[in-house]
Image (cartoon, rainbow, N blue to C red; front, side):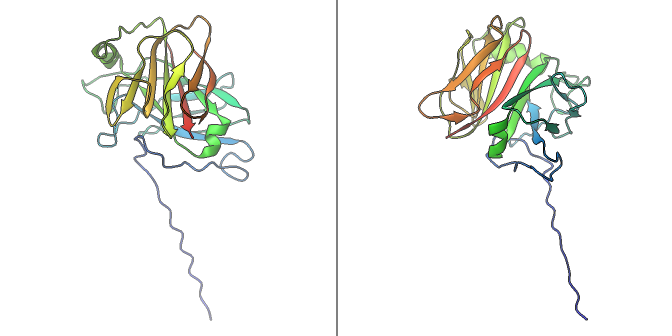
Length: 236
């Protein structure tokens, strides 16, 4: 008699934060979303680093205009959504009602809503979508420390960059562009994350471009007063 031993090794990532280029393989066909698009990624704290991980727990992700398509982030900030095929899909990001699980001072809260851009071509690359939420206790000191007077009546555009880094630009009027590299924020337009503070929301959109190369995921994105817009691009 012959015996066949089938061993299935399953590995899980409980701490998927940070700014690495490890792919989240796109799932199609008979995956968790069937024939639809599987959109996954992370929402982490503004100051999260690989050495000091901090996911945003219980933030709510809902496809704009479709309340049936929703998910809340796990303790590590991960989310999963099934979305209809489209070039881009807008997902509304609602802050958690509770205090941060890992940010000092005790009781720090996330209160600024977000617009998440799920780009079909970016999803197809398998690269990580990453967004950062900032607490109300941190937002003013952060921007002031970098010479920007944060205006809650304007928008902020947050661009997470995977792949090759190129200078990133935004067409709408904004204050000093900020970039995140090796755990440090500074004025600049090239980094793993690039932020356009105090973006003028009057036109309702801004156009994101790169120079010195090309990137997947650039183009027009919505902006709104008192809201952060989050997108991921993949540099070539």
